[in-house]
Length: 192
Ligand SMILES: Cc1cc2nc3c(=O)[nH]c(=O)nc-3n(C[C@H](O)[C@H](O)[C@H](O)COP(=O)(O)O)c2cc1C
Image (cartoon, rainbow, N blue to C red; front, side, top):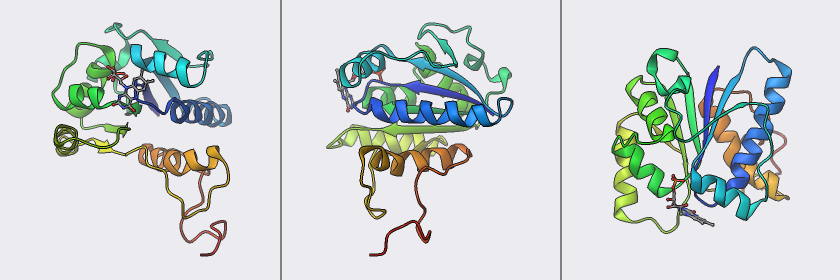
């Protein structure tokens, strides 16, 4: 699978870090099965540094925000899926309206026009009518809005376990192996 990971400027860089760490592990298991292209928005970079610290060197090709020569800037390159994690409401708005003036907007636009999987891990609270209408627009266009809203029924005991309740859903949407979070009905889910 050829996957674009875009890190946007909403709060929740830890979601991106946890996803990227997981993708590193998945790729180590089967290097031919997964190719990742990474792109940070300017605010994504800034929020990561504010919330976590320095951005590590991931073993994935990282593309500049203005690099329209990146392979996934064209549908002909045949990339399979894209996730924007976390996705700001500004990023959501640009995607909803086809604004392709940076690589993240362009890659998302390509995913929608090619009818490929686009997952937007939106984080904001509360939501305005504009945000909700933009979510409706991207959903109608084929994207999956997957709010960065953790669940608690698996009784997560650590922050990572809490993040995994969202990341498990992200991996499921992308069709990637997911052993991060217990599933409802699993014996690993503590009884009510
Ligand atoms: C520390 C910090 C936290 C932010 N958190 C959010 C957030 O949770 N949701 C959001 O929509 N925007 C948030 N923003 C604002 C976005 O970063 C800003 O709107 C930016 O233009 C988004 O651009 P991007 O989508 O290209 O990253 C935050 C900004 C900062 C500096």
